[in-house]
Image 1 (spheres, one colour):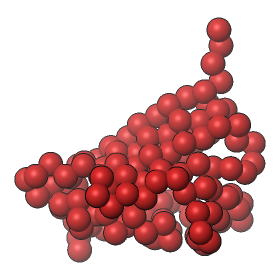
Image 2 (cartoon, one colour; image 1 turned 180 degrees about the horizontal axis):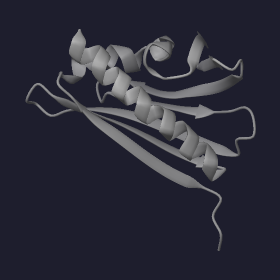
Image 3 (cartoon, one colour; image 1 turned 90 degrees about the vertical axis):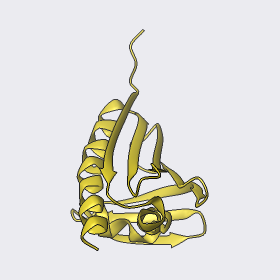
Image 4 (cartoon, one colour; image 1 turned 135 degrees about the vertical axis):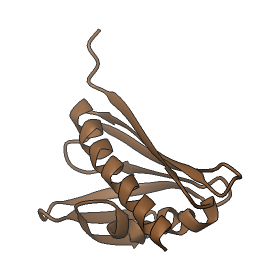
Length: 133
């Protein structure tokens, strides 16, 4: 059996409690501040439309935005995407640091690799933003 689906995970440890990181993740309009290549972000209800620096627009459905569990999930619903789910978890380690994990499951597989590659850069940007604040 040949799978066309892929799952990719990246994480960073940030020298800050989850409460300081969550505002960047939990506010879906702040994506432009930390995810590379996203220049515009509009949210209407549970729909988020992002625009890349190349002018490509994609619509996403926001599925989970849980400030208690520090979990954010969304699904890309446009383009050549057959199936997609991205999850961002902020795990407070209780010592003034947190781990932020970004996971992406997608079909076709190259989409997961592309999104997760950008997400790793985004996590590193998020780390700099929070730690320099």
